[in-house]
Image 1 (cartoon, rainbow, N blue to C red):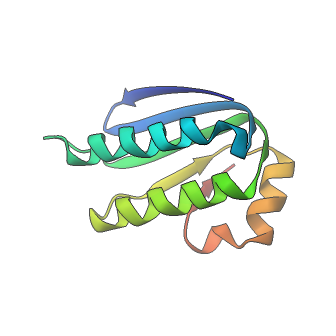
Image 2: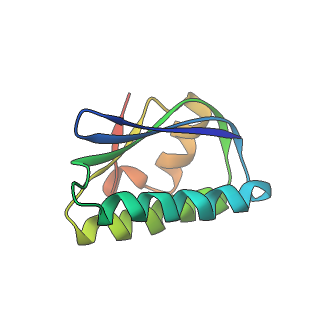
Length: 106
C-alpha cells in the first residue's frame, strides 16, 4: 500500500493505492498521527478526503482506521470523504453501512 498526502485548496487529500491490510499497521498509525496534526494546525482543512480509486482491497483493520479518523474529525466538524472506491471496496462499505456515517463519492 502506498499513500500520498497533499493540501488541495481547503481539503486535505490522502491518495491511497494497492491493498490495505493489517500488514500496513505502521502506515495506519502514521496516517492517524498526520491527520491529527493537520486537524490541530492553525488552518485545519475543510474536509479530509481519501482518494481510493487505486485501492483494490481493504480489510477490517483499515475500516477501523477510517472510523478512528472520523471520530477525530467529528470533534472539529470536519467531514471525511471516501472518494472513488472500486466495486469490491464499495461492496464492503455497503456491507458495513459506511454510507450512514461517511460521505462516499463515486
